[in-house]
Image (tube, rainbow, N blue to C red; front, side, top):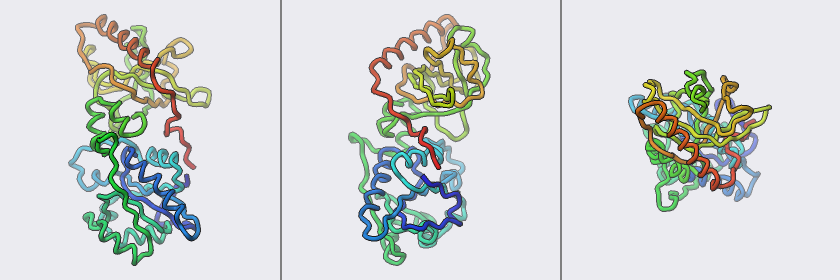
Length: 332
């Protein structure tokens, strides 16, 4: 994928089939739309167009309604990685400002025409752009003739009778329903972080964990214990390990900060995760084993952790084959 660092100075030498939006989560509905870009490009009678995704950073809601709490399912970089895995040629992260939000629909589309060679715009049925979302489908259809582009509107996407929307997925994750969220996403949900030095309680108990703290913008699943897969770089290559991950404040030991603790099963060479300090880990969530609990003491906690590990091993024994995750997709 070619990354356009600044749309104001971009100039593509070929026409482009473009889609525009937040695409937070890049769920099954978004994926259907992105795949359709290639089909529209293939229908062109003239020079073969490239396909392009234009997304925003920060999320428009963070600028227009900063009073509304919002955590993202995907960072802008992650969105482009997923789009690249789906064969999209061009990725644009457009800084979202109040000045951009004030643009009239025609001015925004003229920018896409001038800088990205807009030849077709592919959108969903509830799409709108420009100041106050005044660029609805009727307006876009009128501008298509004036600015010489094709407007393609897709039907809404459902998955097994469920609405595929980012806010639905956020709610599922908040409730710990990571497997249901994965069904709508079309992949396992994940979070990443840099391993930090903790109180080493897990090491003292013989169940070492790699820990990192919650970030400001990325959504974490609800508190509880999960069967997970943990990815890390070793010897310059990505490796994946079965793991059991706790998210929460650790009420049994009077914890305060919300953190993620992942115990990597059968981790070489001795199970000690101390050599992971400062490394980035990516944790994929398969299913929640239980909610967060406060136990009467540490011995009861340890016994439950061992039970969680045994339950996770049974689950891994019947898990589907591993597929390479999108976050390993390189971007140019």
